[in-house]
Amino acid sequence: MMRDMELMRRLLFDVEAAPGPHEIVVAGDAASSALLRNASLLAEAGYLESEDSSSLRDRVARRQLLLTWRGHELLDAIRSDETWALMKERLPIAAGQVPLHIVEQYAFHLATQKAVQKGMPMSP
Image (cartoon, rainbow, N blue to C red; front, side, top):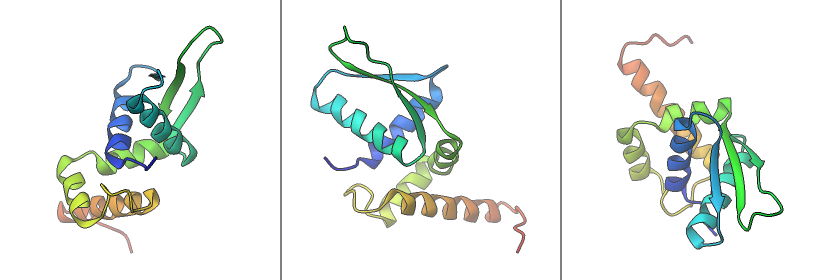
């Protein structure tokens, strides 16, 4: 299964919007399995905290998700639909051919450019 950067972005938004831990439930279908896999990848990379909340009587897998500081930073950098569209235009994000740390670095680069354009002084 390939990483899905669009799904990862939507998942970061969903986790941020939750009033507490965001729970995902995986019932074995392809869509929920992809969601769990991409959530696991984001957790491995340090963008999410993930805790298994399944019980023995459950017939489904449950995960409680929270954003880490790094996750908040990434989401802030890719929040703008305009920025995300520009990134997809310039990087092969949709094809899953770009490492996530490159996506993150490029997003921070674009955020820095936007801040400079708005007059934010940048120290040398």
